Length: 86
Image (cartoon, rainbow, N blue to C red; front, top):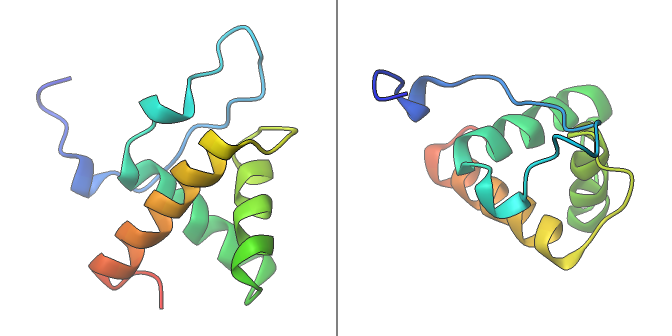
């Protein structure tokens, strides 16, 4: 939608249904950042590799892949840039 500002988006969509699951490349960095933040709220501090895997599960994916890992890293980088992730 044209009237939505991604910087004001504070949620993320769980992609549990394989039939409607989006490609990781189609998920915006703000939504990825939100999933990382939610994972940190639920799990607290953890190693980067563990955070990435946990975030992938938070988003509803049963398995990790290089594409999902890169996507979560993009969200993590964006969160650090905005100061929302330390």
